[in-house]
Length: 94
Image (cartoon, rainbow, N blue to C red; front, side, top):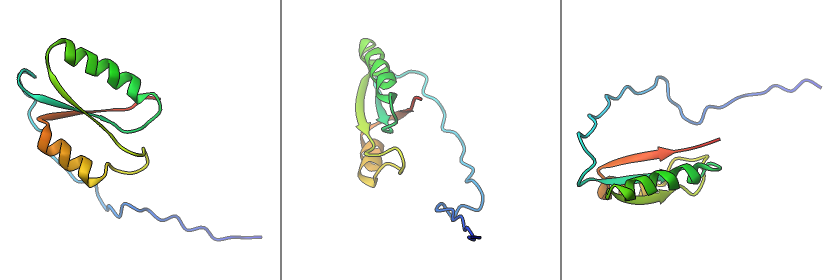
């Protein structure tokens, strides 16, 4: 039996968007760092250690977690990060 297969790309992106990198802050002192867990297995272990390091240095952090690794963060999480944080760290692990 010969079945024709059609692969659909859900992104509809013809070319990757070019975005300039934002400048890094000189210091994290006085800034709030968002820590985003993308829900990938064991990513939380890395982010827990990172959050501990920030805490040891007196750096304010806010934690966020995507409900699933397979989709972008929901709009409410994206908006919270943008409103509540100066920078964000997104972590994953395999």
